[in-house]
Amino acid sequence: MKIAHKSRSEMIAETRGKLIAAARRAFATVGYANASMDDFTAEAGLTRGALYHHFGDKKGLFEAVVAQIDREMSLRLNAISAKARTRWQGFVDENIAYVEMALEPEIQRIVLRDGPAVLGDPAQWPNANACILSITSNLVALKEEGVIRDIDPEAMARLISGASLYAAQWIAISEDPGATSTKAVKAFRTLMEGLLVDNKSAA
Amino acid sequence: MKIAHKSRSEMIAETRGKLIAAARRAFATVGYANASMDDFTAEAGLTRGALYHHFGDKKGLFEAVVAQIDREMSLRLNAISAKARTRWQGFVDENIAYVEMALEPEIQRIVLRDGPAVLGDPAQWPNANACILSITSNLVALKEEGVIRDIDPEAMARLISGASLYAAQWIAISEDPGATSTKAVKAFRTLMEGLLVDNKSAA
DNA sequence: TCTTTCACATACGCCACGTATGTAAGTGGC
DNA sequence: GCCACTTACATACGTGGCGTATGTGAAAGA
Image (tube, rainbow over all chains, first blue to last red; front, side):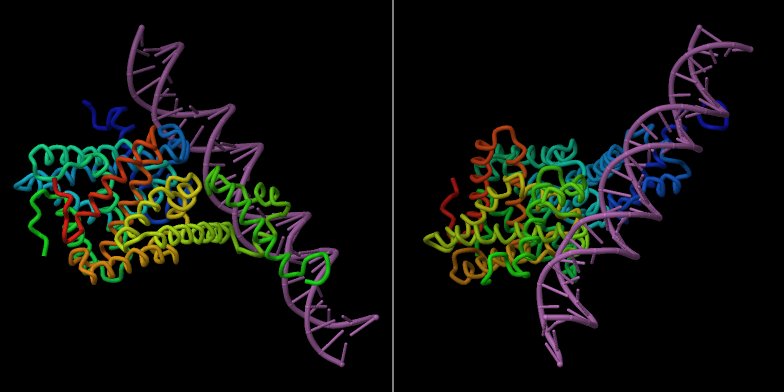
């Protein structure tokens, strides 16, 4: 702390950071299965020894990468919903933002595609639960406020996040993501408005 | 055809069938990555030579397995919707059946979990499109009949299948699948009824 | 300063995939 | 009914990537 070169704990954090960053790039570009540990540890100026020391195995490092991306996603989502005027608006905005985030290739590949195959069901990940919980708590509050119908909040949260996720994937593979995104968001709004007690959107 | 031992084409079909069956078991139990080609080809009384001859590589065989499961799912879904009285009823039933099918470990593991990681986005698979198309065409008809609101059918089909899929995964990992399934189906119905023009379900 | 611990690197073995090659059986032409 | 050719596999081999066991130098504590 007093001298120029960093302290030991700082060095460790830096090493972990470099490994996670390099792995993240590799996983995002070539996928988990095709990412060679020798390659991306070398890219970070290290060897597999460091990886096994800090993360146990390839899967452990992958978990760390997913956790990092998850945290970033949570922060971004919270920032979105915090801006909204009403709770309902924040709820809808947050879900739409989730759809749009899922368009990013890195998230698509690491979190949505390889993640479930390597780590098992996303619903069991810590953050997936956090995300579901966020939607759930919103639904609970909206129900108490009498804004939406009498539904099981957790069940509905699952359905909604699934719909968002799939919408995102659809947009991601479409030829005109902009146009598709517009359609998806519109449909999503309709679906959500179906939950409102006082639904004015009926033509 | 006339003699006891089968014709050549029959032998080939049998070989392909045995390979697909053995691989299907292996993929379902230990997953794609952990399934050793030597092991499950031996289990089928063959070697990797046969596999490479017929399917090119491990991924090719996996595609064939997924295609087989996909066909089975399509048949089952069509049978369900064919039974229903009204189009709306058939539509809802089919989606709920899809949820329940996704509870089966084999489908869960091969189609929903490993499939996307190995073959890429499910929306690009032939059958995924078939499934989406089925929902889409139902929505188009329901819209024409004035049963549901003015929505983009394809977009809504994507959202719905995503919701079904996620609901299924939720049920699959829950401790009490029966109870969870009840909640999920109820929430799903509510979500679908939000699409109805004449929605009586408002409390 | 000496020892202990820790953060990595190095070296090794193993397993699994893909490919190149071999072989026996089937198929068509005459 | 023989021969040329193709087909449907099996066998053998090389390679690459993972995990582990071991080594080493530097930092932390006494």
